[in-house]
Length: 176
Ligand SMILES: O=P(O)(O)OC[C@H]1O[C@H](OP(=O)(O)OP(=O)(O)O)[C@H](O)[C@@H]1O
Ligand SMILES: Nc1nc2[nH]cnc2c(=O)[nH]1
Image 1: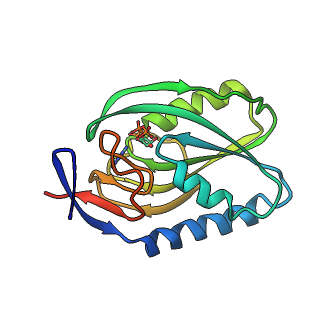
Image 2: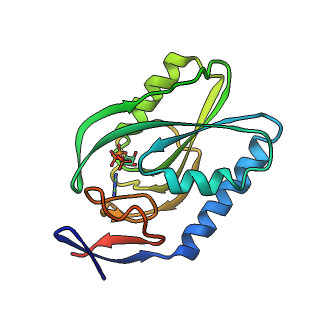
């Protein structure tokens, strides 16, 4: 068990399971985007570890960019997604892959969808390491899903509780 600020968390998803999920997504991306020079767009802060692990397994040419979005305070969403750092490169006509650490309510994804529609990308797909089907309230398609989890608050592998826990190499869930 670990403690971050005032909350306790227990081990939930091992490094091996995460590594297996990352490898599967990377393998599909290698097949689907062979010779297509995709642009990977990581959604900061949470996706930094997942993005790095996926991108280093991609074998062809690719470009890498990041946006920074924020909507969580403590363990719940504020319901308002702020674009803290937007896209700083032209993506018109390009094939884009969004890299998310987690899709929960889908609010963040919806905001990213608006940005990409305005940018007129050729097409884009979403890859997320974790997905909470019970919490997802949107209809945007998620092409690459690593691990589906119940509607519990998790930390580790990029995900934080009020700033702490992003460096953990396995995932923990809030102790009930
Ligand atoms: O589907 P949603 O309910 O929108 O939740 C998903 C988002 O929540 C987290 O970001 P957060 O706002 O906590 O910012 P962070 O990545 O900087 O931690 C996570 O990184 C996703 O981007
Ligand atoms: N740390 C963390 N951030 C999230 N953002 C959306 N869902 C979660 C979650 O379960 N944990």
